[in-house]
Image (cartoon, rainbow, N blue to C red; front, side, top):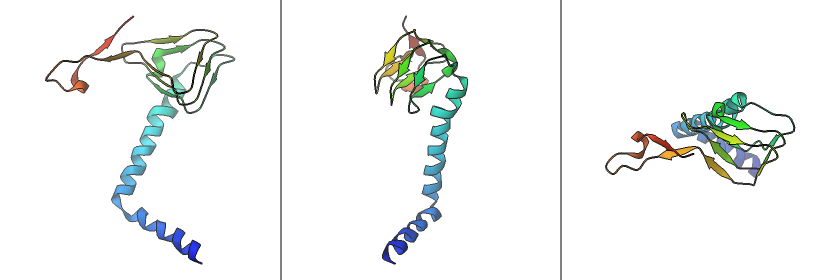
Length: 119
């Protein structure tokens, strides 16, 4: 009986408002990082992308044929930057690819600074 009582005691967390904020934030992150980008990503034949890979601005990402992307990679394109991964390419576990970055202007918060990209 002790194990059942202990498990039932976890239900008290459902009544806390912080739990619901946490749950909604996790669900939002799941949709933004995984579900929505996968629907916008053009899929090629004989390409393997592990389910833990995250994408941003997937419409600006082009992936060639015979590509293998390993677990926990992040491929993030910016609104004005494009990422192209050519044919017969592989990305190892945990690889991070960004198409651009923020500029660094003293006295201005980084999230208000414009994107800068390099060719």
